[in-house]
Image (cartoon, rainbow, N blue to C red):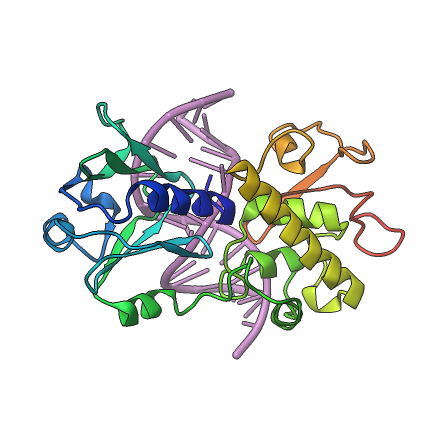
Length: 264
DNA sequence: CGGCGTGTTCAGAA
DNA sequence: CTTCTGAACACGCC
């Protein structure tokens, strides 16, 4: 599930329920999600501490504490962060932070990513150093400069070191709305085309965050990924699918031609 | 049983 | 140097 809007939702969960209250207990139910730390160290460092206001960069959730330590979450393809007031843990609750009023649970099926514990802000910087600017923060000018690579546009937009936060579903949705073929070389887009991608990126992100997840089904292209006979919601042309940047890619050959007048 | 998947990383190839 | 592909990670669902 998690792309930028989902992680923003998790950030809000943490901010709403888990900021400013002492962490009473850290229960690591599956140490397989701990990256570069151990259950012992995680508990020793966090027990009795408070989380301060969390931030987000791309798909990373950054949770500072009232000491120098900072907890970082990445959710891979199947992770989430849940607040539960009571009840038995679910099968995929890998780490549980217990507070007086409830529990914050890092839930993840596939364990493709996990939790990291940084000693201080400098270590956070080192972990996030390779990321480009957040997709919601980047200015139109910086966006234009950064996506000017030779690779196919979808690969560029998915590259977290170029722009942080966009994933497979979001990029397909953005390019469908902007009516640009995902296989176009990024550095051959016109100025207006780059502006369209930027505009639709903002719009898709805003709408997704408002709904609290990405992406809402319904009229979105994303609701049609799994159906091989699905039609374009705009023009009813049969959607096409292929592989770009190693990921399943869905597009409309009519709305998103490779070049003027041709289909992909 | 085989194939697939909202993410990332790495080795190796082009 | 840049870009691309496939495999790996782990698990549930066709």
